[in-house]
Length: 142
Image (cartoon, rainbow, N blue to C red):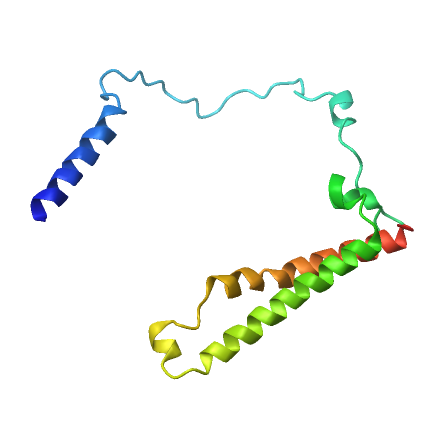
């Protein structure tokens, strides 16, 4: 058993060293501590105009375009239903995990930790996000 581990360790080191170069062949340049500032800016105003403005200053609620290309086209009712489903998954996973915690010895052996309850716990933040998206879409008339 020990010889297999040693062989695996040596093979790993040999494979890792095959991808490196010796230090003598690497050329080193001295980095400049202070360089003069360039007077020209790398960006032009036309390049900045390509970015879509996402501000909504002076308005009560944001426009639908802040939700991205997919959610901005979804109706408010659908986003509300998705929010309810995500909240239901979160509540079910919390309740199921709480029921398993009551079993004797559950904390000692970790039997109360299930992958599907962990996956369902992501429903809480998703429910919050989709309900906010639903509110935005409702305010924008969708």
